[in-house]
Each structure stands twice: as C-alpha cells, then as structure tokens.
Image (cartoon, rainbow, N blue to C red; front, top):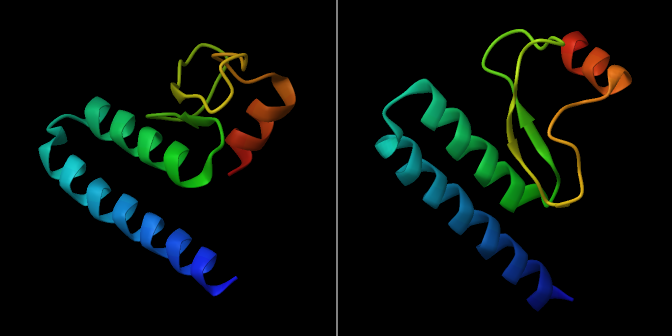
Length: 85
C-alpha cells in the first residue's frame, strides 16, 4: 500500500516538475494553455477544456482528452458550469 502511494506521489511530483519546464518554454498564451491542459490531463486522467477567455457558445477551448470519444466542445450544462466558475 505504501509503495503504491509513494509511486503515485513520485509520478505527480515528476509531472509538476515537467510542467514548470514546459511552461517556461511555452512563450505564447495559447502554448501556455495547451501545455497546462496537457499536464492537467496527465495528472488528473480527465478531459480538460481550457478557455482563454470567458467560456461561451462561440469560443473554442483548448482540449486535451483522456477519452478520445469525448466531444471537442462542452454541452449546455457543462458550459454553464464553466461560465459559473
């Protein structure tokens, strides 16, 4: 049990260190959003939708999928939550 927890902690630490390196090299806001979405996807193993501004029907998020069958956009209820947060 402890070995598994330690391995998971080491993995998360490596992801965070890698994130710092990638963000330093990102350069533009779009690249920062892309790198952040990729790293959150790796860390959380979830679909990540990253909006550069206020989420809306006409705005396109930076998407990094854990589930390849997931949509590239949010449905109305998910969009409402994104706008609320």
